Amino acid sequence: MSAVHTTRRPSIAALAEGVLSGHRLHLARAISRVENQEEDASELLAALYPHSGRAHIIGVTGAPGTGKSTLVTALAQSYRNAGLTVGVVAIDPTSPFTGGALLGDRVRMRSLAGDAGVFVRSMATRGSLGGLSKTTGDVVTVLDAAGFERILVETVGVGQAEVEIASTAHTTLVVEAPGLGDEVQAIKAGILEIADILVVNKADRPGADRTIRALEMMLEIEGDGARYVRHHGQLLRVESPLEGDEEAGWKVIVMKTVATEGTGVEALRQRIDAHRCWLLESGEMALREQLRIAHTLENILRAELNRRIASRIHPGNLDELVERIRRRESDPYSAAADLLAHL
Amino acid sequence: MSERKIRVLVAKPGLDGHDRGAKVVARMLRDAGFEVIYTGIRQTPQMIAEAALQEDVDVVGLSILSGAHMTLCPKVVELLRAQGQDNVLVIVGGIIPEEDVEKLKAAGVAAVFGPGTPSQEYVNFIRNNVKVPA
Image (cartoon, rainbow over all chains, first blue to last red; front, side):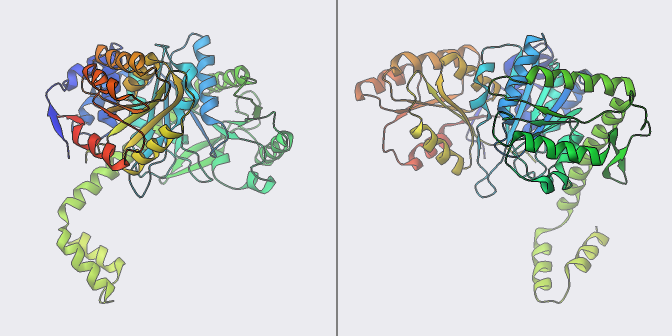
């Protein structure tokens, strides 16, 4: 599908070298290769992976319009003031109809311009449904290897069930805004359960106190010190075995911010840092890393298996099967079992 | 497996705040299947070049209505080339007097599209002129 071919494509070795030595154009191109899943992307990731694992990854998720981009910008500035470098990955949805996307998170991020300690990359979901895109984790690895100390990952505006960020980030912020729902919304399953910190942004708006109360009530019912484990491929939230020991558990609290004015942002950053300390001291960090790696490995395996199996099924056979099923001479379950048995 | 999309940065350099046109163009490009990064108004050439680099775009679309195009557009081209983005296509839309079009092209702008240009025209121009590295 490529139009005009040009010759100046750096080698994987040169690209990896560039990423590690702070060459920003090489970093940008490396991210593209990973995002586009080009043939040599896995080679590039293999070269960079040993240099990753140093960054603290912070996920920022929540409904559209709660102020995620503005909050990410304010947090990035706060980290810069504290002398840390920041990578930002901001995700917006791809149109299921045209495959195009309008990535608008940068509009809110203009105050980060002109700072060599910041690198912002917009990504489209390209068909993924979990709030991230398929390659977000790999792009985070590239930024991590490039030496950014804090990586903020902003998900698409999510509804209630897009929880993939929890297996990518070390600390997950769920951002709410006043007036979006009542107490019943707050006790529904899903996105609120993945929060390490709940943030009520736009806290100067009417109804903010009510939203905060509803969320705090939900937290009281839940208790604290919860954590995630992987059980038969499912992400489960369980009460920490250290429950009862106030010092050892992590307490999810509700924090107020007005990101446009920077109100509450310092306190939020300190809370994120406290979470990081807790992760490291409690041994929870190793657990989350395991979870993240298992998740990555599973995704790679699944994609590769899909590709291998698909390459062995003749498209003609598939069409024929579909037609037989339509005539009710077979059914989708038997047909699938048949097809797999003959691979 | 490879899934490459044409990436376009749409920016409004300078001080005019009228971004209706830029937003319509961004929407048209989205519907053409491109990934469009919209930066908003009042961007300096430095901000635009920096965003183009971080986003590794194939195309930079500049929308200008203020009359400052002869200062701003060549500056953007110059900064892109200086940072090694030799293949990035720079296109300009907005109110550009006829006599300036050739001057802009001489300064490295690939095409200029005036008001009322059918979207198919600039979409095709991008499809036919983006240089994809081998």
